Image (cartoon, rainbow, N blue to C red; front, top):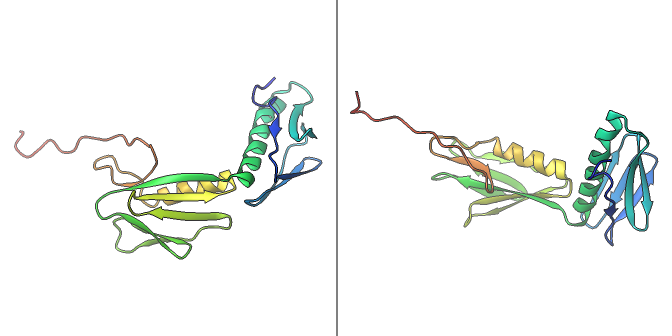
Amino acid sequence: MSRIGRLPVDIPSGVQVELNGSSVRVKGPKGELSREFSSLIDIKMEDNQLKIARNSDNPEERALHGTTRALLANMIHGVSSGFEVVLEVEGVGYRAELEGKNLALFVGYSHPVKIEPPAGISFETDAKTRQIKVQGFDKELVGQVAANVRSVRPPEPYHGKGLRYLGERVRRKAGKAGKGAK
């Protein structure tokens, strides 16, 4: 049995979970998420916990067991506390600013790159630490928006300039050997 799949998911106070067959709707202080799961996996609510079980040891059911539990846990965590991805701006003259809700990136192009956040996502910038925070209650959407922001100017290997995740290590390459060596 899946080690992750057999763990129950605790439902914190202030979060409501509705089960309707294989569809689950989770509502909390940060927002509301709903998702349709496979009918091969049983989801039950007992004693303020969600328990996930499978009917047999078929490979497709075994694959879905832990995944279903992880997705449910992410939904509950998202609507109760939310998710955040932090990006760093590295490079001389590179900066990020907020214009209303939109994010304006000045990263070496002849124009600022403006990014409009989708519903449920918000940006925060800090000029002192040169960081961009992508926040929201849907883990998949937060990660995708952060990846889209990073793709505007990914870090390059020679000088390390660009947008990178907090703590991301950029593999550096050596530049030219020099003019005098023949």
